[in-house]
Length: 298
Image (cartoon, rainbow, N blue to C red):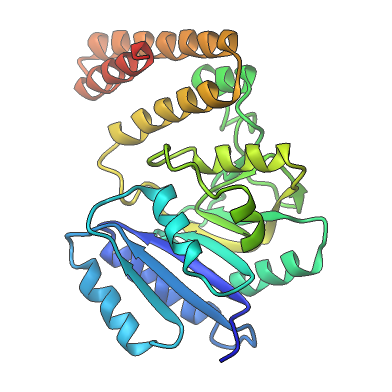
């Protein structure tokens, strides 16, 4: 049997309904295509009925659907790496379970990628549920960029993350939607498995840039992205972002830069805790006290 052209890898963790919607959108997006594809879903020990739903998909699409069942939640990056190892196509699309492919977005992204030899990694345009643009690419998090993100509402001013309307070379694209040659992803060693969730795409594409790979944003391929669907409330993502910044700087930056980063993160946490106390906001106090503790661990 001929190998597929494209392998779509999805990590599932307690997101039964959104994963189901994602899968249905993929089938709909590709129903009229000549593109041959497979879907590999890695389930990280879901307890919400996801597994039963995925097993039904596997039974109804046995030739193109592969399900990997983990006994524990091994994290987003590690599960993606696991899924990529099982793929059969030369091209891979890493899609979050909380995405919905609009119209022929997947084929558009594939054709753009395949026909432009300058492109090594590419992401599509992500939209919020209300169809407004979602900032989903940007510059690497140098100290000025981190400062903008923490204190200047950098996303609002398109300093830290943005959503261009034209095809553009960028430093990174969101891990919710990344297409690449399998060979390139594996040459880089895939996602760093020390990162449990959040910032793994920044780390991957930072390493990719250092190796001379080019990363592009392609706005004609559009996907709805719900965001943080498998995260536990608002505190968890903030702590993971704090942890991600610290890990990136410990891994890729100098000791001086790491110390300056810690100072900024601590300042943000102290200000947020003070605001929480002034407004009796329990969420702010608890979240940023935990964030502050993260910056003091070594």
